Length: 278
Picture 1 (cartoon, rainbow, N blue to C red):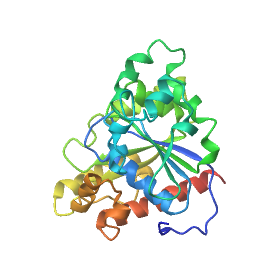
Picture 2 (cartoon, rainbow, N blue to C red):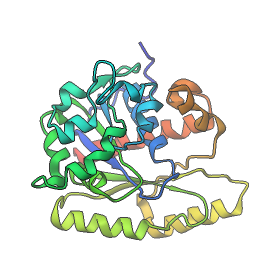
Picture 3 (spheres, one colour):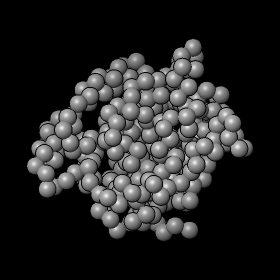
Picture 4 (cartoon, rainbow, N blue to C red):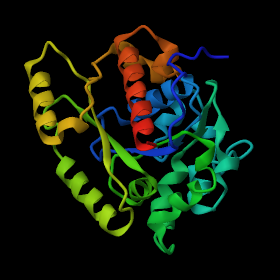
Protein backbone atom coordinates (compact mmCIF):
# COMPACT_ATOMS: atom_id res chain seq x y z
CA UNK A 1 0.00 0.00 0.00
CA UNK A 2 1.46 3.35 -1.03
CA UNK A 3 2.26 5.80 1.70
CA UNK A 4 -0.16 8.69 1.97
CA UNK A 5 1.98 11.76 1.44
CA UNK A 6 -0.43 14.64 1.97
CA UNK A 7 -2.45 15.47 5.06
CA UNK A 8 -5.76 13.54 5.18
CA UNK A 9 -7.08 15.25 8.31
CA UNK A 10 -8.95 17.92 6.39
CA UNK A 11 -12.49 17.02 5.39
CA UNK A 12 -13.39 15.80 1.95
CA UNK A 13 -14.38 18.54 -0.48
CA UNK A 14 -17.12 18.51 -3.08
CA UNK A 15 -16.39 16.25 -6.04
CA UNK A 16 -14.71 18.28 -8.77
CA UNK A 17 -13.97 17.78 -12.44
CA UNK A 18 -10.92 19.68 -13.69
CA UNK A 19 -9.97 19.75 -17.35
CA UNK A 20 -6.29 20.47 -17.97
CA UNK A 21 -6.07 22.39 -21.21
CA UNK A 22 -3.76 24.36 -23.45
CA UNK A 23 -3.93 23.95 -27.22
CA UNK A 24 -0.22 24.67 -27.42
CA UNK A 25 1.85 21.48 -27.17
CA UNK A 26 4.87 20.92 -24.94
CA UNK A 27 3.70 23.07 -22.03
CA UNK A 28 3.61 20.34 -19.38
CA UNK A 29 -0.09 19.55 -19.68
CA UNK A 30 0.16 15.77 -19.40
CA UNK A 31 2.94 16.05 -16.83
CA UNK A 32 0.59 18.18 -14.75
CA UNK A 33 -2.36 15.80 -15.21
CA UNK A 34 -0.41 12.68 -14.23
CA UNK A 35 1.43 14.16 -11.26
CA UNK A 36 -1.50 16.07 -9.81
CA UNK A 37 -3.65 12.94 -10.06
CA UNK A 38 -0.97 10.86 -8.35
CA UNK A 39 -0.53 13.23 -5.43
CA UNK A 40 -4.27 13.66 -4.95
CA UNK A 41 -4.63 9.88 -4.78
CA UNK A 42 -1.67 9.56 -2.42
CA UNK A 43 -3.54 11.94 -0.15
CA UNK A 44 -6.31 9.37 0.04
CA UNK A 45 -8.58 11.32 -2.31
CA UNK A 46 -10.42 9.02 -4.76
CA UNK A 47 -9.24 10.30 -8.12
CA UNK A 48 -9.93 9.41 -11.75
CA UNK A 49 -7.46 10.46 -14.45
CA UNK A 50 -9.21 10.54 -17.82
CA UNK A 51 -6.87 10.42 -20.81
CA UNK A 52 -8.64 12.26 -23.63
CA UNK A 53 -5.55 12.56 -25.85
CA UNK A 54 -5.07 10.02 -28.69
CA UNK A 55 -1.32 10.17 -28.05
CA UNK A 56 -2.10 8.43 -24.72
CA UNK A 57 0.88 9.91 -22.88
CA UNK A 58 -1.03 10.08 -19.59
CA UNK A 59 -1.81 6.37 -19.98
CA UNK A 60 1.81 5.38 -20.60
CA UNK A 61 2.95 7.83 -17.91
CA UNK A 62 1.23 5.59 -15.36
CA UNK A 63 2.93 2.51 -16.72
CA UNK A 64 -0.05 1.26 -18.73
CA UNK A 65 0.58 -0.16 -22.20
CA UNK A 66 -1.63 1.85 -24.56
CA UNK A 67 -1.42 -0.98 -27.10
CA UNK A 68 -3.36 -3.25 -24.74
CA UNK A 69 -6.54 -1.31 -25.49
CA UNK A 70 -8.68 -0.87 -28.54
CA UNK A 71 -9.55 -2.81 -31.62
CA UNK A 72 -7.08 -5.53 -32.48
CA UNK A 73 -5.46 -5.55 -29.05
CA UNK A 74 -5.18 -8.70 -26.93
CA UNK A 75 -8.31 -8.89 -24.77
CA UNK A 76 -9.68 -5.68 -26.32
CA UNK A 77 -9.45 -3.60 -23.16
CA UNK A 78 -11.81 -0.65 -23.02
CA UNK A 79 -10.68 2.95 -23.38
CA UNK A 80 -11.93 6.53 -23.66
CA UNK A 81 -12.82 5.76 -27.28
CA UNK A 82 -15.35 3.12 -26.18
CA UNK A 83 -16.89 5.58 -23.71
CA UNK A 84 -17.27 8.40 -26.23
CA UNK A 85 -18.16 6.50 -29.38
CA UNK A 86 -19.69 3.24 -28.16
CA UNK A 87 -21.39 4.64 -25.00
CA UNK A 88 -19.51 2.12 -22.86
CA UNK A 89 -19.91 2.91 -19.12
CA UNK A 90 -17.00 4.77 -17.53
CA UNK A 91 -17.38 2.61 -14.42
CA UNK A 92 -16.59 -0.49 -16.47
CA UNK A 93 -13.85 1.06 -18.63
CA UNK A 94 -11.86 2.72 -15.81
CA UNK A 95 -9.04 0.62 -14.40
CA UNK A 96 -7.08 0.55 -11.17
CA UNK A 97 -3.45 1.69 -11.16
CA UNK A 98 -0.50 0.84 -8.93
CA UNK A 99 -1.41 3.80 -6.71
CA UNK A 100 -4.22 3.34 -4.21
CA UNK A 101 -7.23 5.62 -4.84
CA UNK A 102 -6.12 6.38 -8.41
CA UNK A 103 -8.12 5.06 -11.37
CA UNK A 104 -7.40 5.63 -15.06
CA UNK A 105 -9.65 5.82 -18.08
CA UNK A 106 -6.98 5.01 -20.66
CA UNK A 107 -6.56 6.21 -24.21
CA UNK A 108 -5.02 4.97 -27.44
CA UNK A 109 -4.86 5.92 -31.10
CA UNK A 110 -8.46 4.76 -31.65
CA UNK A 111 -9.47 8.03 -30.03
CA UNK A 112 -8.16 9.96 -33.02
CA UNK A 113 -11.11 8.60 -34.98
CA UNK A 114 -13.57 9.90 -32.42
CA UNK A 115 -13.19 13.45 -33.78
CA UNK A 116 -14.81 12.26 -37.03
CA UNK A 117 -17.18 9.67 -35.56
CA UNK A 118 -18.73 12.17 -33.15
CA UNK A 119 -19.61 14.69 -35.90
CA UNK A 120 -23.05 13.23 -36.69
CA UNK A 121 -23.97 12.78 -33.02
CA UNK A 122 -26.66 15.00 -31.52
CA UNK A 123 -25.19 17.19 -28.76
CA UNK A 124 -21.74 15.80 -29.54
CA UNK A 125 -20.03 18.33 -27.26
CA UNK A 126 -21.83 16.89 -24.22
CA UNK A 127 -21.10 13.18 -24.73
CA UNK A 128 -18.40 13.09 -22.05
CA UNK A 129 -20.44 15.12 -19.58
CA UNK A 130 -23.31 12.65 -19.83
CA UNK A 131 -20.92 9.71 -19.53
CA UNK A 132 -19.40 11.07 -16.30
CA UNK A 133 -22.65 11.89 -14.51
CA UNK A 134 -23.28 8.34 -13.19
CA UNK A 135 -19.81 8.02 -11.64
CA UNK A 136 -18.75 11.48 -10.52
CA UNK A 137 -19.88 10.87 -6.94
CA UNK A 138 -17.46 7.94 -6.77
CA UNK A 139 -14.49 10.30 -6.99
CA UNK A 140 -13.45 13.42 -5.17
CA UNK A 141 -11.43 14.54 -8.19
CA UNK A 142 -11.68 13.78 -11.89
CA UNK A 143 -8.81 15.18 -13.97
CA UNK A 144 -9.15 15.26 -17.76
CA UNK A 145 -6.03 15.44 -19.91
CA UNK A 146 -6.90 16.93 -23.30
CA UNK A 147 -5.08 16.93 -26.66
CA UNK A 148 -3.11 20.03 -27.78
CA UNK A 149 -5.96 21.35 -29.91
CA UNK A 150 -9.39 22.93 -29.57
CA UNK A 151 -11.28 20.18 -31.41
CA UNK A 152 -14.29 18.12 -30.38
CA UNK A 153 -12.36 16.11 -27.76
CA UNK A 154 -11.21 19.24 -25.96
CA UNK A 155 -14.70 20.75 -26.23
CA UNK A 156 -16.06 17.64 -24.55
CA UNK A 157 -13.52 18.10 -21.78
CA UNK A 158 -14.50 21.75 -21.31
CA UNK A 159 -18.21 20.99 -21.32
CA UNK A 160 -17.83 18.24 -18.72
CA UNK A 161 -15.63 20.29 -16.37
CA UNK A 162 -16.43 22.38 -13.33
CA UNK A 163 -13.23 24.33 -13.90
CA UNK A 164 -10.03 24.28 -15.92
CA UNK A 165 -6.35 24.21 -15.10
CA UNK A 166 -4.06 25.91 -17.62
CA UNK A 167 -0.34 25.06 -17.67
CA UNK A 168 1.81 27.76 -19.28
CA UNK A 169 5.52 27.23 -19.89
CA UNK A 170 8.09 29.85 -18.96
CA UNK A 171 9.49 30.22 -22.47
CA UNK A 172 9.21 32.48 -25.51
CA UNK A 173 5.65 33.09 -26.72
CA UNK A 174 4.27 31.66 -23.48
CA UNK A 175 0.92 33.42 -23.93
CA UNK A 176 0.70 32.61 -27.63
CA UNK A 177 -2.67 31.00 -28.25
CA UNK A 178 -3.94 31.67 -24.73
CA UNK A 179 -6.24 34.44 -25.98
CA UNK A 180 -7.78 31.95 -28.43
CA UNK A 181 -8.22 29.48 -25.58
CA UNK A 182 -9.96 32.13 -23.47
CA UNK A 183 -12.29 32.96 -26.38
CA UNK A 184 -13.17 29.29 -26.68
CA UNK A 185 -13.86 29.12 -22.95
CA UNK A 186 -16.21 32.10 -23.24
CA UNK A 187 -18.10 30.37 -26.07
CA UNK A 188 -18.39 27.21 -23.97
CA UNK A 189 -19.64 29.28 -21.03
CA UNK A 190 -22.27 30.98 -23.19
CA UNK A 191 -23.50 27.91 -25.06
CA UNK A 192 -22.62 24.71 -23.22
CA UNK A 193 -21.31 25.11 -19.68
CA UNK A 194 -22.11 28.37 -17.86
CA UNK A 195 -20.40 27.21 -14.65
CA UNK A 196 -16.99 26.77 -16.30
CA UNK A 197 -14.19 28.88 -14.86
CA UNK A 198 -10.42 29.08 -14.81
CA UNK A 199 -9.47 27.64 -11.44
CA UNK A 200 -5.70 27.65 -11.72
CA UNK A 201 -2.91 28.74 -14.03
CA UNK A 202 0.29 26.80 -13.48
CA UNK A 203 3.69 28.07 -14.61
CA UNK A 204 5.91 25.21 -15.79
CA UNK A 205 9.51 24.65 -16.91
CA UNK A 206 10.76 27.57 -14.82
CA UNK A 207 14.51 28.20 -14.74
CA UNK A 208 15.50 30.87 -12.24
CA UNK A 209 18.88 31.28 -13.97
CA UNK A 210 17.18 32.65 -17.07
CA UNK A 211 15.86 36.20 -17.06
CA UNK A 212 13.21 35.27 -19.61
CA UNK A 213 11.59 32.86 -17.13
CA UNK A 214 11.26 35.66 -14.60
CA UNK A 215 9.75 37.93 -17.25
CA UNK A 216 7.20 35.29 -18.25
CA UNK A 217 6.15 34.79 -14.62
CA UNK A 218 5.53 38.52 -14.29
CA UNK A 219 3.62 38.63 -17.58
CA UNK A 220 1.37 35.69 -16.73
CA UNK A 221 0.65 37.01 -13.23
CA UNK A 222 -0.27 40.35 -14.76
CA UNK A 223 -2.68 38.64 -17.18
CA UNK A 224 -4.34 36.18 -14.76
CA UNK A 225 -3.88 37.73 -11.33
CA UNK A 226 -4.64 35.54 -8.33
CA UNK A 227 -5.64 32.60 -10.53
CA UNK A 228 -1.90 31.94 -11.05
CA UNK A 229 -0.62 29.38 -8.56
CA UNK A 230 2.12 30.62 -6.22
CA UNK A 231 3.85 27.29 -6.87
CA UNK A 232 6.02 27.32 -9.99
CA UNK A 233 7.08 24.00 -11.53
CA UNK A 234 10.83 24.07 -12.22
CA UNK A 235 12.60 22.64 -15.23
CA UNK A 236 13.70 19.35 -13.68
CA UNK A 237 15.52 16.40 -15.24
CA UNK A 238 13.93 13.85 -12.90
CA UNK A 239 10.48 15.15 -13.82
CA UNK A 240 11.19 14.67 -17.52
CA UNK A 241 12.64 11.18 -16.94
CA UNK A 242 9.69 9.81 -14.96
CA UNK A 243 7.28 9.17 -17.89
CA UNK A 244 9.79 6.90 -19.64
CA UNK A 245 9.73 4.72 -16.52
CA UNK A 246 5.94 4.68 -16.40
CA UNK A 247 5.81 6.38 -13.01
CA UNK A 248 4.63 9.74 -11.69
CA UNK A 249 7.31 11.78 -10.02
CA UNK A 250 5.86 10.94 -6.59
CA UNK A 251 7.11 7.36 -7.08
CA UNK A 252 10.08 7.92 -9.38
CA UNK A 253 11.88 10.55 -7.26
CA UNK A 254 9.70 11.97 -4.46
CA UNK A 255 12.56 14.14 -3.16
CA UNK A 256 13.15 15.98 -6.44
CA UNK A 257 12.28 19.62 -6.94
CA UNK A 258 9.62 18.63 -9.48
CA UNK A 259 8.01 16.31 -6.94
CA UNK A 260 7.94 19.04 -4.31
CA UNK A 261 6.20 21.38 -6.77
CA UNK A 262 3.45 18.94 -7.72
CA UNK A 263 2.94 17.91 -4.12
CA UNK A 264 2.37 21.58 -3.28
CA UNK A 265 0.04 22.01 -6.26
CA UNK A 266 -2.04 19.02 -5.15
CA UNK A 267 -2.44 20.58 -1.71
CA UNK A 268 -3.62 23.76 -3.40
CA UNK A 269 -6.16 21.86 -5.53
CA UNK A 270 -7.51 20.15 -2.41
CA UNK A 271 -7.96 23.54 -0.74
CA UNK A 272 -9.73 24.87 -3.83
CA UNK A 273 -12.20 21.97 -3.68
CA UNK A 274 -12.90 22.59 -0.03
CA UNK A 275 -13.47 26.31 -0.66
CA UNK A 276 -16.05 25.49 -3.35
CA UNK A 277 -17.86 23.09 -1.04
CA UNK A 278 -18.31 25.82 1.54
